Length: 294
Length: 344
Image (cartoon, rainbow over all chains, first blue to last red; front, side, top):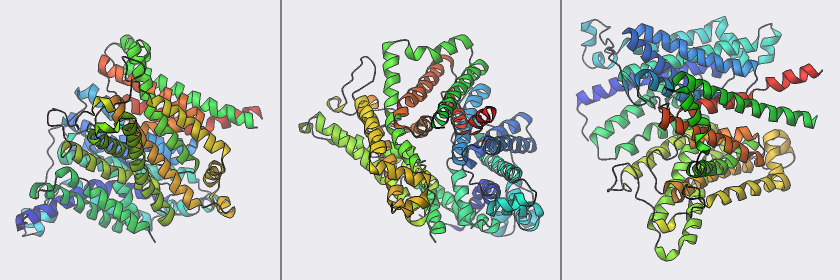
């Protein structure tokens, strides 16, 4: 295995791109986590966002409409989840499980109905990678690694920073955090914890919807198992980042690093690819243990 | 009061079943080319011949066995989400054993060994999550899911690599020698003697949880951890045991599938079975004997979905939607509440 500088640059660039879906989903999941709800449906919400986002983008040939559809569909599913939990008092985890299953079913049935296949649905959507002026994206090393990404990756980092600000500095963020630590106090102050939970679920939906869509855009296709555990990895990133947005972003980078490592090892070594594919999950599991142990 | 609660639980289960059937009909109406024949395929065809009916009953076997494990784990508030990987690993271990067992062993010994090794491997995997929860308070849901994802990749590697059947075009291990396959009891269908083991396990766990001290303590751990600790019950041990039992039952059903209906380990072996077992346990609402009707119902949804896929081209994944609907209705607490309010 030899790593030439070009491969290394490529590798780091890929790592940042691979972190994009995780950033969206884990920060989205952070909102419900802070409000006191462990959202295990991130995986399913991402799948819904990926499917409807790609479908809308394919239909309109416009990535913004795709993003809109991804946000709307995943938020709708997330709000359904919140509604079931708040109004029908369903068990949080079983509801999350049900949403994951629902996502699997809906995407398969609609994929068969709209595209006549349950397998790969390829779309012809190109994403502009030249957002920065040439002299910046052509800077040696940092140009290709940091400044040649698509708009959605840039937006993912804006999403992290904005969310960090909202959580830390706004009344809305404070209410969400307070609901998580002391719902009685929140309702004593005249706010409805149920309503705040719904708002947190809305954030989860927006984040995971965009995360799934980013994944779809990165391969310009929808495939049945497109999310393949990233929703769960995003969940672990919340813990590893100790529920702090910037640390969560760093955790996402770590998991993305494991993912690109597993991709590159497949091309460069004789270790069987299927074994290497287990690497991201293994890294995630170890991180979970290290993060939660104390 | 007791009767009232029992009624609303039953009522909720029936509502859940009714709504998933209504949804099934709706999906068929929207997506099947020919609604009436799709309805027939879904609701009647699984019962229309000895072959289909036997296969339908054969499908309940892994659901009963894994479902009872999940149900036991639920009792102590443990959610094992690693079923897919545990089934796969149990199947692979059992399959390797059955492929390499010398014929001198005789079928009976091999069946017992295969069942044992499958259950053992599944239990080990479950135990890891149990230990992580008991000693380091790590969510057993996330850890069991992640461990399962790792195991699925490793199993995929073995099936497509060292264990790949070179004469087959599919990604699968070789066929298990027919002497080591479980005898079929309802020809021409795939139903085999493992159904008796499934029924025995239901009885066994029913007695264990109702009549034994262990079963009682397990329930106390789930209902009130603080109180259990106060009574001197080792909550830790029961958390680990619950995860080991559910993992073991998953592994066992995988192993029985290999020497039963499947006869080999194909890639993607578990194909949603792990999640279906959770639906079965939820529908049974923690009562061991209710596992049987619950498994019959979920297997019916599966058989129906498979039949409409072959007959009408509606993806068999509709089963996940139907199960999701059933799950949502089953955990909804508002229906019994409304009913109680009206009475007051």
